[in-house]
Length: 210
Figure 1 (cartoon, rainbow, N blue to C red):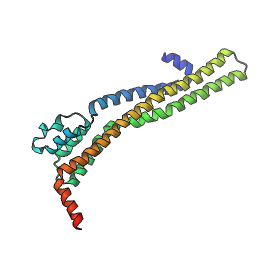
Figure 2: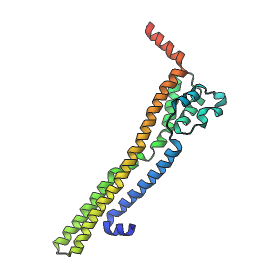
Figure 3: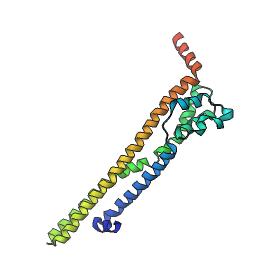
Figure 4: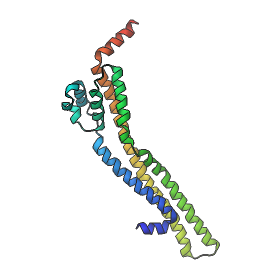
């Protein structure tokens, strides 16, 4: 089947096949990573683990046994035992910068494949039509013209077949990452209000008195 596609689509078949294989590899690899690392945040459960976190006994905390990248981030953060809101946010930012890109890895390249595949298909279309007109110019047979038209149609279809699932999976993965970002921002605010209640209260009092 691949050999037939190469024979029909011409030289543009090679970059199209490469794009297809890379797209399939990235989708499978990202699916495995999301299966292992991605979990929706159960806020009540996470807050319980955050509030009851004991740096001296961190191995027995709920977050240690919870799967997902968010649990890893908060467990590592609380193990550093932040003493203030400022430290809490600095440590949390550092952990997010360190761990969250693991979910985004290769997605930029998947988006590139989605954008470039139709262009490759169009290149094959132009190549096929040039061959067709060259055959017409020398009075070639209908069979020779059909080869040029087949190349044009095959490459166009191949470019779209590669581009559509690549774009769909790119947006699917990023929608999950965006949802996780929103959940983590919400958890950050809740955690701050619980862990540093006195500090926040004192800050508000100082602002009122000022």
